[in-house]
Length: 493
Ligand SMILES: *[C@@H]1O[C@H](CO)[C@@H](O)[C@H](O)[C@H]1NC(C)=O
Ligand SMILES: *[C@@H]1O[C@H](CO)[C@@H](O)[C@H](O)[C@H]1NC(C)=O
Ligand SMILES: *[C@@H]1O[C@H](CO)[C@@H](O)[C@H](O)[C@H]1NC(C)=O
Ligand SMILES: *[C@@H]1O[C@H](CO)[C@@H](O)[C@H](O)[C@H]1NC(C)=O
Ligand SMILES: *[C@@H]1O[C@H](CO)[C@@H](O)[C@H](O)[C@H]1NC(C)=O
Ligand SMILES: CC(=O)N[C@H]1CO[C@H](CO)[C@@H](O)[C@@H]1O
Image (cartoon, rainbow, N blue to C red; front, side, top):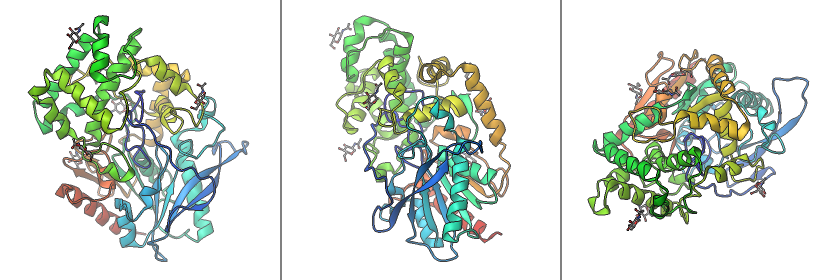
């Protein structure tokens, strides 16, 4: 979640397919192009006309959706690969052969034509003039899937690809979209690779932090205990205004800590806990290829630091870890420690506002469709102070969405897609044991046609990133296994 704490959901990568909502990294400006352009030697950028509301024939408003194409590997008669954009701008790194993301290695072997489609409301794909709550009613996974179906149909017509086999790819939220595109549009999508996909929408995702504990314990059983000790100390100290100056200094806040409400306290505790949670979620992922900074700060880095007695009591070791992340992300200070400052930023309805690239949009989707609130209500996790209620109230504060509406929306999502009980074929579900999101994913094969691929010791979407020499052997095997499955499915009618 690239920014200040928010409701959110630590979703995948900073950019495109594997998510984008990263709490602690600021979004860097990506070159903005509003015309069809050649991005590099092989990648082209285009725009496709879409309806604003696919479910209302009387509404004829349209907008332009961005997509990238690479025909570098295409051999006539080969399959068509469609990478689905998630809750962030798409970037051409995912189409670049030099960068070598996994799906392109499959495309090369199979002679596939490759498309990458940006999700409505994210990046430069703007269906409305701004992000007012009223306009955001057109932001939903159902509308996004309808965009995708229309894209598939139109492009197939224009390029003579109607009889080709289309394969959907995605990671994290867009992994779920990949699975759902196969579920809802089986006549258009032949198969799907749904990496680290959370299929069960849930308001109370308290399991997430339990899995953070377990992933830390897998590195070193003492590690989560030390993190808990540090956090307990922090929580105790933050209760006494006499400590505000020291805490401000210890964690290098951008302005002096001044807690005026329970929400201020929850906000700062949530933000600091996120330094740990994000580290776990992305540990050792090869995200450097999409220009994410600090990817060498892993669970190991954290646990080694938490064991370093020379740094003082665990509270100071944790402070040192937060410092390390701040400097590695090239930020001058940790963040402005008030709920209200953040609230103003998230309420900004401009696409060019502080969260206009995707943060505000994704929070809206969590408040209307998914929940996914990673709260401290469970006792079996290292943190405290940001319970579910805190998140539920944010939906009210940002969008005036009431708790009943939130719960009803999440129930409807599971009713519409089936949650874990997905009735489809030819979808593969890779999951990483370190990634807390696997709690909402398919982690054991449902049928032969709905296989899970387990990758012990890897984090969120690890299988999607370019291979590296230091990859765990099971990660390399998983990539090969997924390829094998895909190759078999492409032989089926
Ligand atoms: C799946 O979602 C439902 C509805 O939100 C929730 O009650 C249930 O606890 C979830 N299951 C898991 C394992 O998270
Ligand atoms: C703040 O930190 C300083 C130096 O570490 C220490 O001397 C002082 O007692 C601390 N203040 C409080 C209120 O604990
Ligand atoms: C991460 O990489 C940066 C730059 O390459 C380096 O300065 C830093 O020491 C590394 N950090 C860790 C924890 O390995
Ligand atoms: C929203 O953000 C934009 C861009 O940063 C800024 O110019 C504008 O003043 C902000 N609007 C409000 C109401 O704060
Ligand atoms: C959220 O779930 C946890 C663990 O499953 C439970 O202890 C807690 O009471 C739940 N919170 C709410 C507000 O329902
Ligand atoms: C961590 C986790 O949930 N792993 C599961 C991934 O999927 C395999 C089945 O392929 C399960 O055996 C693992 O438990």
